[in-house]
Amino acid sequence: MLWPSLGGHWLELWFLNWLRPRLPDTQRVQLAVRLTVWFIGGVALAFGMWLTAIAFTGRRPAPWLTWWMAGFAFIGIELVVHIALQLRGRPSFFNARG
Image (tube, rainbow, N blue to C red):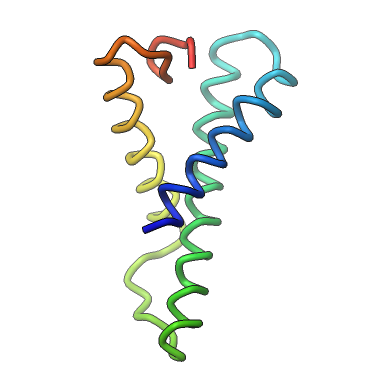
């Protein structure tokens, strides 16, 4: 469970502190890049989970999840987290402050 939670946290920090300041100030560009980063990050984190499963079990897990499903699932996880932030009045994806 640390791959999506801790890995997602570091991915978000990388976007906010390194990539976002280098992007144009246009909100559409930043939202599109953020969704792209979440998708690619979700695929990378799923690959890390897959490698961890192999390391601990010594065999390959069943291929129930394809790479694109992992990317979209991570976008869904991030959107749920940002909905919670929005409801608490915190900076989030939806109010363009976070």
